[in-house]
Length: 269
Image (cartoon, rainbow, N blue to C red; front, side):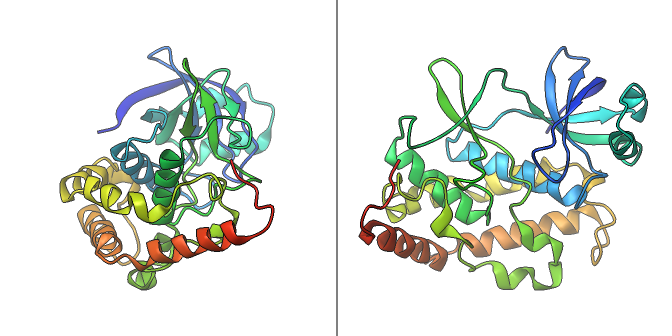
């Protein structure tokens, strides 16, 4: 389950994304990038962050620790920006915190060393969760730690099918949109070389644990569902269908890689 913390101070807004996360200090003396349930597309973004992070970790990919950040809107009383104050007022209670990585640099596979098999696992993972938000324009990967290594961040745009549950089942075989723009397309080994191992790592137990980590409060009241457990079952059904062999979305991604490699002067990491 997500470790609970209480936000004690709102430090500053981070305006890179549409959801306007904020940097907050907490009662465990940690500092977190907090995404608020009252922002943008609401709680579903937080759900996507948790599910994606849990599956990424199961694939051996580095992601910052996520915490359940309890927020009292009063922490923003000293913030002069009315937009921030309004966001905090709309987001009392349980929000999502991501461990802040001090001194981290944006990851660039053209500069930073890249393991082709690691890159292929990231590519496979992003295709699995329909993450369209890891490109040259917006890497959503940070170089951090000693020794330095890449960490994956910001998966709120993944699993976009949950914004239209009646049509969710039809997306289970859907290819990754804009795969040709993926940050690691040119640096990755053949995605089919890692397909079997990645799929095997995401056992029913791993999937069950991932959906169980999503707090009830972010699932309750979802239109078309009577209870949080029904929403968890819907996510499990979707992941089960997406992982079922022969996984056409993997073959389609491999074809995008083949086309990329055939292009003269294709940029590689």
